[in-house]
Figure 1 (spheres, rainbow, N blue to C red):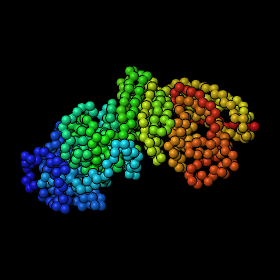
Figure 2 (cartoon, rainbow, N blue to C red):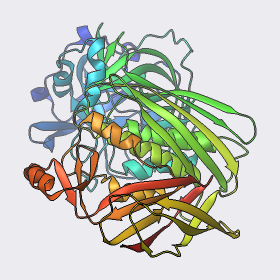
Figure 3 (cartoon, one colour):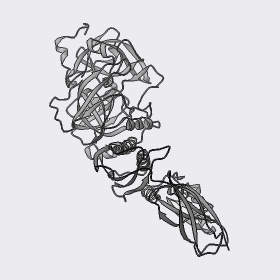
Figure 4 (tube, one colour):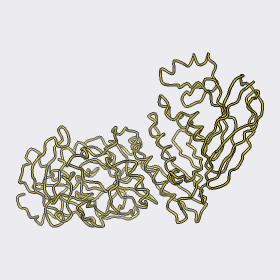
Length: 578
C-alpha cells in the first residue's frame, strides 16, 4: 500500500487465516499499511501506519522490532493508547504483526513498535492444552524476578501498557496491589477505569482488532487486563504482542470486551473497558504474545467472605485464578477490600477471622485469629496480610501438585481496638520442685485502658532435672517464632507445611511455655523436644542433608488462657529447680 489515506475496503480487518503473512525481510522504510483497534464500542477502526524501519535485536537476540508511525485523526489525537497492544498491522492486505511498544515518553508523534507476526506464531504453535490439564499450568515456575516487561525500565522502548482494571476495589486496595507487585511488573495497575458485565451477551464476533480481556478475579469484585486481538482462527487467538505476566503456561478466563471510551492523555492515554461474556481461556503468556483457546474453562478458586458483627451482614463471593505468582496477592487485596466495603468500618475496627482453605487430597488449612489495629497497621490490612502469607506458603511449596478447591472466610467485626499489651509477669516462687504447681502473675493493659492482673496456675513437669529453667509468657506470634521456624533449611512437603500452618498459635490467648535446657529438633515441620544426647547423635546426619534443625533449648507448651483480644508482648521468668 503506497497511499497514505485509507480506502473503503480498509474499514474491515482481513480474516487472519486467509490474509497471509507479510515477510519481515521485505519490510523497508516508506511502506504504508493499516492497523486496527477499537476506540469505542466493539467495532475495530482502521489507522494509517507508515513504516520507519526495522530495529534488529531491539528486544533481545534475534528479536526484532518494526518501527512505525500511526497517522489519522484519532491516533494523532490520542497517541499510543494503553490497551492498543496487539492491534494487527497489515501491508497490502497481509498480516505484518502487532502494535506492542511505545517509544519514549510524552512523544509528540504516535511512534510505535511492532512485534513481527512470525515471532507471535511461535506462541500460536505451542501445544494446545486440553481443559483437564489447565489446572496444572499454575504450577509452573515464574521468571526469577516475576517481571513481565521484556525491556529495561530505563529504556526508551516500553511495552504498551495493558490496562489492569480493578472493578469494586478502593484506591487503598489498589495501592496494596501496587506495593506488592511493584512498578516493574506487567500486573501494575494502570490508571484505567471500567466495569464487568459477565452475564451480558456480546453478539459481535471477535475479529482482528477486537478488544479482549484476561480475567484474574471475577464475581462481586473483578480484576481484568485488556489488550487487542492480533490473529484469530477457529480454535485460538493471539493478542497483545508482548506478555502480560510472562509466566508461560497460565489459566485465565478470556472474555470479550466493550470499549466505553478512549481517554487521550499525554501522560497515560487508556481505554475504558467493560468485560462481557466469557469465550474461553488464555493458556500461554509468552515474550511475544498471549494465546487464548476458545471453549476451554480456566481453573478458578471459589472464595466466599462473610462479614458480620457491625451493621448489616455482608456476603461476598468471587473467584480467583489458580496461579502461583498471582493468587496470594489477589486473595490478599480481595480480603482487604471485603473488610473496607462497609460504611460501619473505621480505622478502629477489630476482627476475629475464622476460615479454611481446602486442597484436593489434603487436610484443610485452618484460619483462626483475632486482629486489632495498631499504630503501624490497621486490622483490615493485618487480616489481608495474614491470609496472603498463608497462600504464599502453599504456593511456594515446590511439592504441591494439586489444586486448591475453595476458600471460606467468616469475619466478625468489633468496634474499637481489642488490643492487649503484656506489661510484666512474675511469680513469688523462684525456687521450685519438679511437678510443683506455681502461680504466674501477669499484668496486661488494654489499649488506652486500665492494667489488669491475670493469675495463671502452672504445673511444672515431673521430669524436670535440677538447675535453672525459664518460663516464656507470651503472645502466639512470639511462641511461633520460638517453636515453629518459618524458613526450614529444606523445603517441607505439602502435608508438613499444612500441619505447620495449622499448629500456629492464635493471637487472642496468653501462652506459658517452658524453655528447658535440653536439645530440640525440628524434622519435616514436626517439633521433637527434650531429645536425649543419644537421639541427637542419631539425627545429626540429617542436619547435613538440611532435613533437620537442632536447638540447644526445648520449648515445651505448658498452658494458655483466652484473653478475648489481640495480645502482644513477651516476658521471661527464670526458675531454679531443686
